[in-house]
Length: 317
Ligand SMILES: NC(=O)c1ccc[n+]([C@@H]2O[C@H](COP(=O)([O-])OP(=O)(O)OC[C@H]3O[C@@H](n4cnc5c(N)ncnc54)[C@H](OP(=O)(O)O)[C@@H]3O)[C@@H](O)[C@H]2O)c1
Image (cartoon, rainbow, N blue to C red):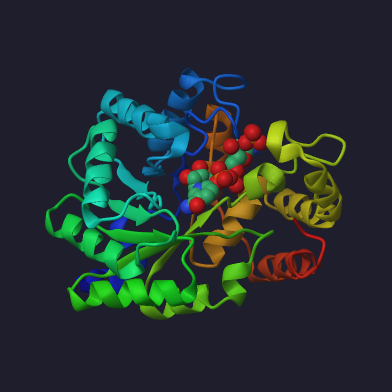
């Protein structure tokens, strides 16, 4: 068992924050090829690595492989070291451990590397059990194809089972990737955060900006384009305004920091690793500046209280 993971959960990625790349190549949900293109993404990648963020999260399904391909191309052109996480989708027609190894090898090829820093099961989908996928992960780990094993969207009970299956083979479950933000605090209530903190499993927070809603640039009159701008979101945008106003006020007290940095710093204060998605150099630059400052205990308390009012209301989307 690698004790370092227990002592220092984030050690395997050596990052306080990463970058999410779902939007890299995804036309349908995020509008790739319209409002932003490969050149924008390359600049976002470069400004991130040059600014000291070198942990990237992707998945075989993002842009049907395009996200991995773009990331692979940018890494090759950059030539420096990055930490890479990808994910395996356990589609119901993938019925054996070999399916995972085949998919992993394809991901490695698209990314142009021989080993991943982290490989994650994207979500629990029947019929294959947690135990079978963990056995396959362990095989990939023993073969040197991956440096660490993670899960995503697993319940408390599924995380426990994954952890125990791997522990029997002397391997540590390194991380779980979950939705977590000022607008989604389910993991604080469903036992996932407590279990991971107890077992030293890193939590990687996805959609840390609530898919853009916490940036403060959207309102019910100016909702996001496409699928993100549906009526339910417009109503929700009205409801979250008091929180956004407070985020702006807190940011102003820190020499005019934008709401995105307040949202990301709040997650870092909870001991998790946020992976905000970025589409442009400007967004990447703004997000990485989060690491230059911290929130006070008083500010965290205030944000907790305002976020509680929203996340405990029946109306949230
Ligand atoms: N494991 C899973 O099941 C799962 C699920 C979802 C996501 N993820 C991972 O988590 C990552 C992040 O989540 P996410 O992409 O869903 O949402 P997010 O990080 O909450 O929001 C990202 C979006 O916010 C906007 N944005 C980001 N920085 C900004 C800035 N500085 N100023 C203004 N706008 C900014 C951009 O979109 P606009 O400019 O269009 O507003 C960006 O695409 C994904 O890329 C993926 O790697 C994993």
